[in-house]
Amino acid sequence: MRSPGQVEQGSDRVLVISGLSKAFGALVVVDQLDLDLTRGEALGIIGPNGAGKTTLFNLITGAVRHDQGELEFSGRPISNLSMTARCRAGISRSFQVPQPFTGMTVFENLMVGAEFGANLSAGRAHSKCLEVLEQTGLMDRANDRAGKLTLLERKRLELARALAAEPNLLLLDEIAGGLTEQECQSLIRTIQEIRATGLSIIWIEHIVHALIAVVDRLIVLNFGRKIAEGEPEEVLASPEVRKIYLGIEEGLEDHV
Image (tube, rainbow, N blue to C red; front, side):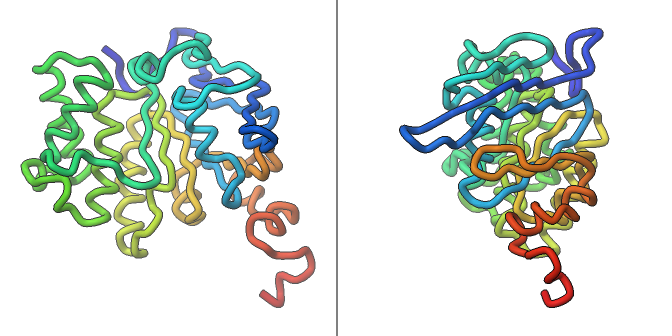
């Protein structure tokens, strides 16, 4: 049984990606990417549409097989592991568009994640799901059908279902997208509380202020390549990032 942030003894790096590449025909979507994540760290990833962000998550989880490169998780190679094996090893994700089992209750959705994602026994899965319901603010909706939830609640369910799989690494794919500012702030507070447990997080997001409220480090992708990396404020101040991601030419800041 795993606990959040737990990796192999003596290793501070949860995830190490080296020279990762993926192409669909002539279209290169991830290009010689190097990335690492330290235990307990929160990493943000931004970039324009088509930059390869979601494909990166698909490569980490095993939904898509990479063409070149290496992936290590908790000190062990995972390139040859199935999606199920990677999930049970401790990698869990949310999806950009929530995909609950709409005819099942919120609690039943979590049980799927706990029993099949983490391979927990029924008793342990039940306890884990109660813990996650409390953690994500869904306890009052536990017995409601997932199809009746609001957008914010569906986003919370997407987060909760990933947490029910007892991850060491949580991948969040634009979980704040489509929310009002008030809803976004509410979700940010929940993610901050989850982060405080020591769980390692990689978060892809277009809503930059949400990211910088949580993450320690920011990476910018463009056409599958990493073009900037560092502290969020420093990265966002980069002229190249402002031009590519924000559409601001150097010297024009005063006119925007």
